[in-house]
Amino acid sequence: MEFAWFLLIGLAAGWLASQIMKGGGSGLVTDLIMGVIGSILGGFLFSLLGLSASGALGSLVTATVGAIVLLAGLRAINRSRI
Image (cartoon, rainbow, N blue to C red; front, side):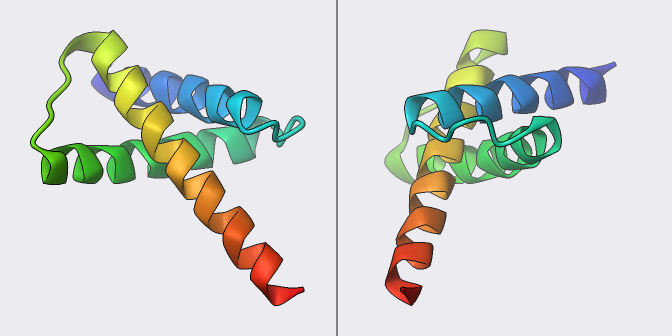
């Protein structure tokens, strides 16, 4: 059951990140992947800063922040290739 929550929070975080960053509808699978990777990245970044989040809302915030950082990094890499 926890894995299902992890996927749901990852999906919501990926969607939120694409909306905040004006991603323009990346798609369900891309949002899910971005949210899941973002949750790992967000957890790492939060631990570096000494922050912690608990509960479903805290997990969503952490994953969303990580997904935003991931999306911003990917966009910066794509722009540098041009």
